[in-house]
Length: 336
Image (tube, rainbow, N blue to C red; front, side, top):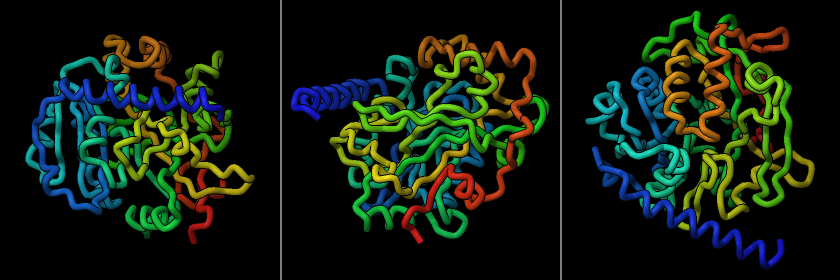
């Protein structure tokens, strides 16, 4: 990388950090229990809106995985999300009624809170419909993974977003609060993924899966990105710049082996496609606060008129992390 490009990336990082500082004014403290956070605690950060039905299992799943404290931004929920979260001793909440779009889709808000409370901690950034898995997650807690990463001087951990879906029309099976969404959305595409290196930021751009196959069949290049870096040993000089798709400094984006081998990696099981999906789609298509004037959600809204079935003859039913490793979707690398 030349001196000029290096300088531009440093300026970009400082700009993102300045944005986060300014956007801090948009956050109102609802319940700040960060004083109970211990130096070695693993922290989860997330932006939520109207997720009352998903939150009970989401919180249970990540507590069982090994998260010690949740730091959440509520973007003006109108359901019972806040009432559910307030009073829980391992949850700190901020709220904002400001635009999700002008906060760069929540990135500025979370960068601000991660800078203030995440410094020196392993931080996990996920949405309420994303469930982080990694090799040996069935018998090794998240702490075992972060200890291994620390021992190997690894600062970030990659996890591809794997879209999960039911067999049959999306809207036909009812999801209930507290239920494991994988009981319904238990199928996935084992292949049909493309990988493209991004030379400027050194991350891999991944697309494909059922959204490219069904919703963006005519324009697969417009399908959502699936590459994510949700787990990072946070430092104040770090900043996300596009959801959790990439960060600065750009060395944090190299979560793959550059010498032809396999590097330890995980997955985010993405359980968007439940019967509650159409409510979220209608709201977001109207609000137009997502990327590209909510083109993605407008595409979903059009397709949902026909209650599509994402299942196909090549779909596989999820059974274990070992299955996903065998398929080459994740790797245990040198972690034995």
